[in-house]
Image 1: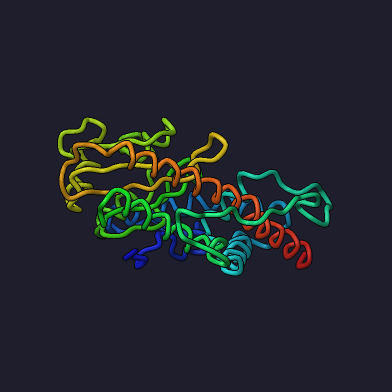
Image 2: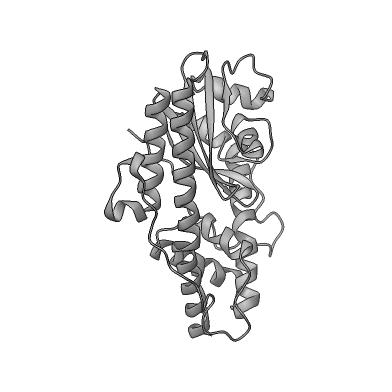
Length: 285
């Protein structure tokens, strides 16, 4: 069963205060991983706030954050995903009534190997949950996680069977000292047969994986049009001899299928959300 007790995208303060000494500085007793993750979360969202404030002459960064938050809730899109789109996608023409006036719309692609139909094929949470379940079935394990490629890093989106230290440590992956990061760089599947002896990890990453009870791992890129949009990794209680060609082929198909769906979601649902931001900000202005 997929554990969604920690979706890795909790509420952030509207804007960090800088009007007094020590504001925003974590206390010495704060957990270092929690402090790091909150800083990275803020760093991902604040550029989008600044863009919205400048573009629509909003009263404050807090107003930009509120616009992002309300839109993310309305369209059921994670705040980080929406902020990434605001930063990544070229803004509307000056004075334009619509952000994307000539945008073509497409239906969600089929997901036959995930056994989803109807409304389920348009739900971000449902699709990623089913994709993780499928990968864990193929790799014959019950530990794994889903990451999305945003803001130039991998952000943990869903997980199951992994403890809190693991999910805090890998909430954001920025460097290449993990199997998932190398799979993203190489745009191909990466198998770590023995975590303890593999030279792919630095000491801290290795410890975070081992203490969660994982002795082997496999990372599958979710790709579309040559781009890695996400990653699904399975974790295994014992070292692996390797995955079979049948398993690798099934995983490759799933990675391509889910990658196409993520591409559709980014170019349909996320763009709908950006259009809403544009119309709402124009009306309020």
